[in-house]
Length: 496
Image (cartoon, rainbow, N blue to C red; front, side, top):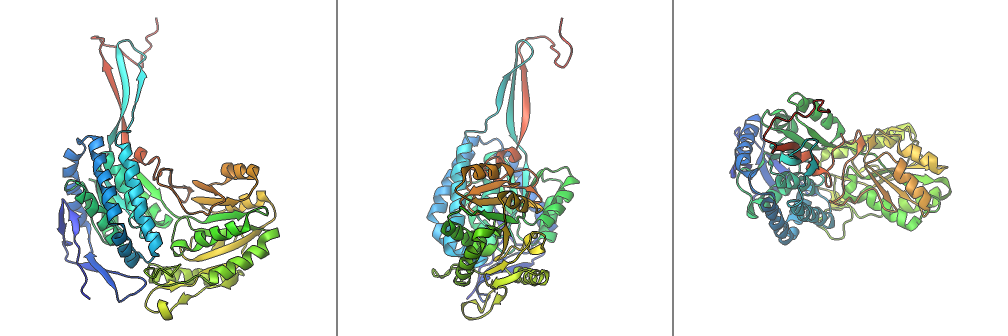
């Protein structure tokens, strides 16, 4: 079956990479299925895209914010109409099951509606001046051209988190989608164009990190960078952007803990553990990768979790009966395999899974068995380092205080979870868990677009997606209007 060839979107035109190079977008569940062929871009392509964005910025920033918001609202309506198609194409390129890819598109719809409302809420502050006949206020201004680097695990939702608030604030954008999942970003941006977005306001440059991502980060015409990906890559992005004084928003890794107390609803916690650990095949920065179990319930919970994990149906996400799809590529399989070996060498007990799946419905893709380790201690690498696969570690504790200490002992701080019926412990956990997100009686995944999303420590640098994103995509200007018709001097001792 012939596949479609796509171009970079630059100034409203679909163009090949100047080098002529391309790469294939391959279905991780069926390597014979070529989703599309995309430009393998380099610095010259980034130059063109940034120039187009800079040109469009001159007029886009002057479009009233409520009018910019109306485009996002129309895009939400179009995304709703195209949800089924976009979800199926996302499952083909990323692998996760259809219910999840429909949720990914729905999150972009939710983000569009949410940010569209912000078009009339780009509030500043008016305040009394210290001087007579003088008016003082502050207003938000767009930043300029924003460079965006998106990950493959939420290939429409996360680009929407970045693009929509940047656009409503009056910025123009150059986005580099992940090389594993470019089509979903193309679908999102095409929808914006169909909703009325002018040429050049959003530009797409596809390709790999060193060749396309690095030039975008370093480009002098780019005023800010929004990055979602690994902590190691995020550190490099921050260092390179610092050379040109670009502000950077970083959303990176996690090693998220779910604490199950002795008074928890164990069936509810079990459902949460399965969804948190194996939803999206564990390929979420918020995935439940550590489950902390009170010793009094550990044996019962472990037995039930292992049985349920072993029974999960793995295969092509287009099959409605499948519960867990493939990992996105061979490198992710290699990482999961490596960490299984590390865990066993450290003394952890492999309770189920721990190997690639290569037979039956998994014969032509990159699949890994849902994996559970018991006997894990907080100092083991499997309990401290991000795997980004369907691998979860069980750690036992004796007291609530010990559980909090274990949860906080890692270098990451994205999402945390506590299952308990004790309201006092719940509020203590909300206060003491070192993370950007805390769930009570729910797993570590499931963020909503209108709340702040991001973390602390090696997870992020303080900026947030969702609520708070406009603080990154705008800059403040103080405005003073003096109607006294004379020189008045602030910051001078005027007291008589």
